[in-house]
Image (cartoon, rainbow, N blue to C red; front, side, top):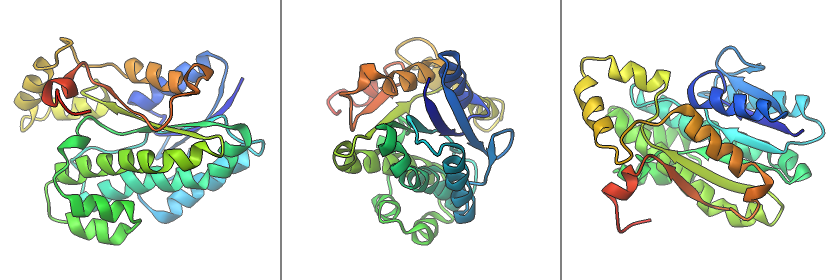
Length: 252
């Protein structure tokens, strides 16, 4: 039995990952905005510090793995999207590094197959530079999709840029890029008259013939956290029914 920590374990993809880890006998420490072992707002610096401290207090022996799953869609204020989707991932992962090294744990970060659609390179680089205020200012007033896709591109790049150094201390960093997954987040968009038609067309275009389920992402996350994946490092794995291959057949 291992000890794992995760963010965003209350609903959707996170809940499915939590359930699959617990089903195999693992202990899971959950951080979320509500209904969690540690209640913390990852959109704030103090909330992220609370989350790290709470996890370390509950896992003094170290961590076998960490899943950064908490995130928000493109419908919130863009600066908040940047804070939660990027800094809520990176600052927690960095804060838990020593605990992960102690057990040679793995890290799974949830990116998105929309990451390659990112259009504001300056925003992405501000995120990667750790400039939370600057990144927020860059996307303030822009479409939320710019902030969302850019935040997911930034976390994927962060994984790729840091995976070699972290591997040298025994910690594997990997990312999953989900496509359209049936979660409360996507359900809210599907039921919104402004987005319903576009969401239906997007789902119908998936080569595999269906939208994904949270269990699809959970299965990949649990694999990446298992000994079977000990040679997988620095990967960004698309779990999207073939959408990325359809849109970008010659890029990978």
